[in-house]
Image (cartoon, rainbow, N blue to C red; front, side, top):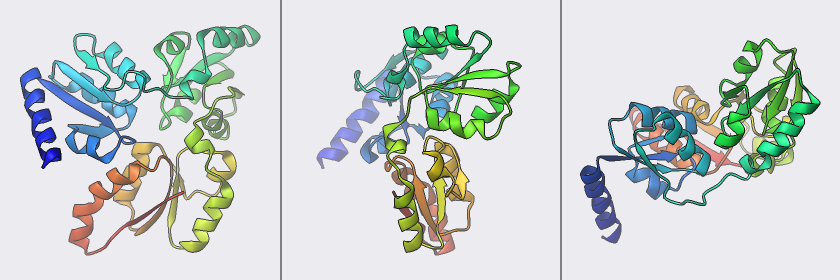
Length: 261
């Protein structure tokens, strides 16, 4: 009863303030339930731009709300938890990046979108995990400083002939996934597809059936005929996966099983 009253109050406030709620895949289930859009950071920023709402409530971390505010300056962007941050984004600063640029004056800086606006401003171009390879290969420079995720940068380096200078940053969630854990789960679920985010370690990615961005993982689950998946990313994504496949599964009289590492 209390949850239902809270949901009704949120709906009322959204209507009164002409507001929408944007929720990242990694937020808790009850937050996703009241959101107007659930997606990765890039798709949510696009939703902010395309929406006619005057107020954007961004249920995510600081750099996501920051990006939405930059590309939608006429809208009020609210961050429910002001100190919600990303440890990886904090692993690169303007000062440290400027120092690295001095060491490699011929290099272009490719900045993963999971970074602060100040760091983005010091970069030549931004990328997402989905388009990082294409972005790097589109640049004329033969040298690239890739910030701040070392694992994503290492993955990109396998698909380009450019010299990549890796930044010593990482996502602690993805970096903590170990290949031995994956191998154990693959023995337990021999028919499962292993879908891994490119922020995982190289030895983990070598075991993956598909290396995909967060939204790419969601799309692959919807597209695939497999019924078992080992998911190599944040565990909260399972809520979205289960919700998105529930109707399809019931029509096909099957159930999809998601195993988190």
